[in-house]
Length: 383
Image (tube, rainbow, N blue to C red):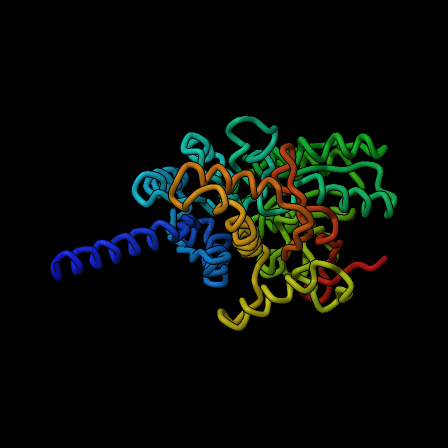
């Protein structure tokens, strides 16, 4: 009898332990913490330390890997997380090309993916694969609205475009050019360059020959400084605008005085001291920025905000998903996808998010501002 009681007690403990393990939500995180894209991946990896450890009554485990900026490694690590760790969701990878390369595997596994990338191509046009992906930065049309409004206000009629020869640059041109035309302006020249290029003199010459009044650079961080600097060196006197990919101190560090006067539309995270307290995004952005600076000794680049917002979104969706299934099951993952798609009026560090079946980014204009580079820093443009 005593042995039976002991056996029952041990069985109960084993069952409780099993249930405890099952109740833990496993989130994979893939960042490019090394390699050419490390300037994006390092703040994203750092942001993981600030993510919620629990959601409702469920604990969350974050399993983090570095893909070394290699898209083939992104695929290998994604497959590993899906087959061996059996994750409930993935945050990452860091770069737009890397994210595009793994989304099909996430869809086949019917597991949600939160992509902290620039290109909306991960979620547009919506299809059976992309319905499993959620983009945790504002879409290009939101940023483009701000850029076009700033251009119109400054009397710009003709625009040159130079962007990366990859999903980021191509997506930007496809979104921006029709919006320019609709606004009564014209793109008079369009050029591309590669992320590893060290010179764009040929592209600059073609842009200059078209005589645009303004030029939009669709690059990222330090990589966006290259065409800007060479345009200035070539004597371009018009106004140079940048996408939110340039909303980082790396642009200023590389460009120096030559990027002074540039206009950038991006998250208010960079100019928090100048943002009114009434802005709905400011409180969350301050929390993220303050906690990041306390732990890592510097203010966070915008790239980390995509991972931070992904964590907030998951923490809100997980308790809803848990009503329909246990973590680690197909039912839970499907319910998690549905809960993410049902996100409404959620305040993030980069804006307010309203997801729909057609829009898996959901950010609106409430978190973006027009900035200029003045005296070696970003400054809010108030006019």
